Image (cartoon, rainbow, N blue to C red; front, side, top):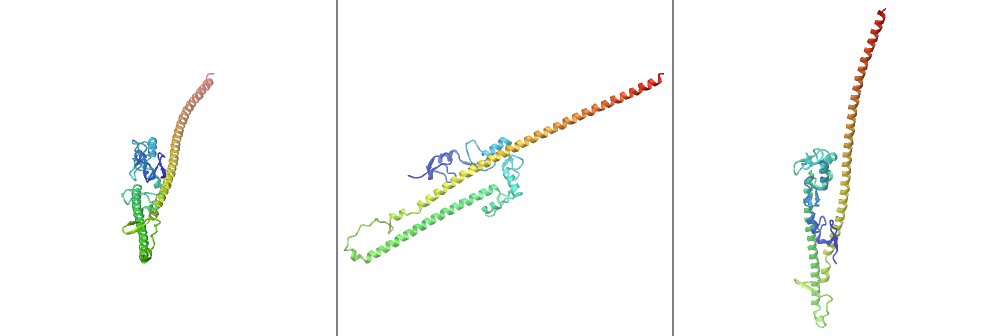
Length: 307
């Protein structure tokens, strides 16, 4: 019975050939949940519904900050806060100001020294880096396919060559002893040979083909890739949750700060009003005290002059 492998989306088991090479999805999941690019940030994501055209991260940012603006560097419509997208903001903090991309000529390529090794040392922006890596991957796969085909062809030739040599040796030996063997009844061979283009080919050797081993190795590697992709997806979810928490904390901090500033302004205003009231009251009391003092002086002078 052929081995069955689980679809990474619906987790139902199918033959290995029925699953996609990249995402390990069955045919129904590939149709229902195709991999598309986000309308805003341009990252690839697995579409949950046909009406959704943006990834989960951008959907959360839209709820928090509204519709984004084009980034002043890469021109991708993903600037939710300020004039820069989060990708360019983080890259600028880590790698410094952007340079001109060698491919699209926009001022949005950051000097990621490690990533430049993967694109033949070119200074490319994020989108051009993805395109370049995609081309390199396709070229690598084509070369690998050609190499494996060449190896298989070479192994076939060697196998046929060995079989032909063995057949030729046996025929020479038969001719040299033909006079003796004519007197001896021929024994039935252990395995019947199949003659193809004049060469003798054994069915036991046909079963000793490397294709089966290659298929098992490829299946194991694809299983490992699927497992690594699941782990990567889980880590991405953890990072997304942490970024969401950081965003919520920042929003709460800004709200608390604005509330504290408003409270301080109100206290300052109240203090100013109380101070002005006290100063006015103090002036009024000073006037009253001056008036009383004046009236007392008049009464005193009137009492002296009356006798």
